[in-house]
Length: 125
Ligand SMILES: Nc1ncnc2c1ncn2[C@@H]1O[C@H](COP(=O)(O)OP(=O)(O)OP(=O)(O)O)[C@@H](O)[C@H]1O
Ligand SMILES: [Mg+2]
Image (cartoon, rainbow, N blue to C red; front, side):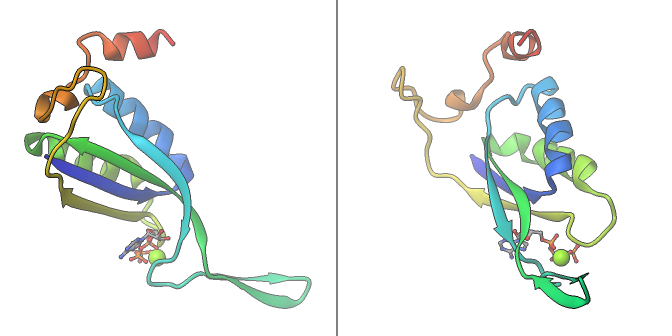
């Protein structure tokens, strides 16, 4: 199992989420974070003064998947996250030791599989 952690632009999240759902990966967590990349922020002028924002808002996505599915997740994030401009974000892949579904006590990769009709249920709202 692996955890994919991605820092993406806010606009990129909805297309990423939608495609992951379609591909059978409805389970993920997000948080709104602030961070800096190698540009260390952006400098803007406001009423004549130069202001540097060192931290930019990003959406952090966490998605734990079976190892065989990692590149499906990464490719989806790259596809929808890339504008070509600086600040598109980063993707990290980390090892995951174990997973447990609390409701049933199941463990391992089977806890990561989508419910058979998860995609259609979610699409129906
Ligand atoms: N090494 C890192 N560790 C943790 N978070 C990071 C790291 N690199 C980037 N991030 C997160 O990703 C966000 C976007 O990074 P960003 O896309 O600017 O990376 P970059 O390396 O500067 O690439 P680019 O040159 O395309 O801008 C950052 O604001 C931060 O939240
Ligand atoms: Mg950057």
